[in-house]
Structure formats: structure tokens, C-alpha cells
Length: 95
Image (cartoon, rainbow, N blue to C red; front, side, top):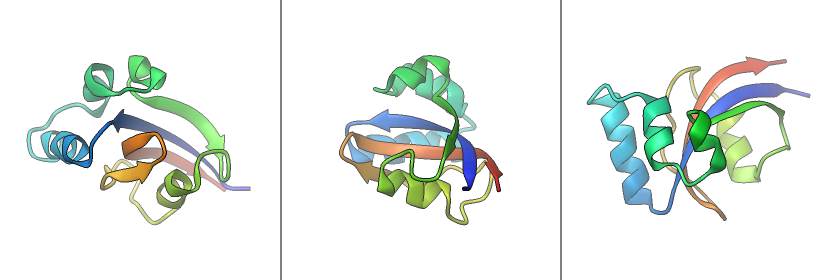
């Protein structure tokens, strides 16, 4: 089963997620620092790190992006799940 190492930022609105993505891509902001400052997930304290997980371990919308052709190190478009809006950054794919 494919596995990945990824981090994310969880916020309440798509607009907030889009703004954070812009800060990373255009302003050179650190994904990890923005996760610490803005993420509503407990993983925010560790820069949004989710560690290693397998395909199917996360909600389907999340999995669809992590195990897609999103380049390693690129920041996803905002992804809506039942928890809110996520920005995802895949650090590594295994298998």
C-alpha cells in the first residue's frame, strides 16, 4: 500500500487557506511557521507535520490530493473536508 509523509494547515474558510497559500508562494512565508500560527489542528504545533501514513488512513478528499500527481514540496490548492479547509504539502511518497 502506498504511504506518504505530509504536513497540512487546517483553517475554517477557503479564503483563509487561499491567503496562506499566497503568503507561501508569493511572500516566501514558511509553511511550518504558518501552520504553527494558523492551523486549527493539533499538528500545527509541530509545523503541521502528520508524519508517515498510508493511503486510506485519512479522509478521502485528503488522500485524493496526497496520493495524486501533486509535486513533492508543492502546496496544494485549498482542500475541503468535514474538518475545514486544508493546505497540503507532500514531503515524500513511499511505494
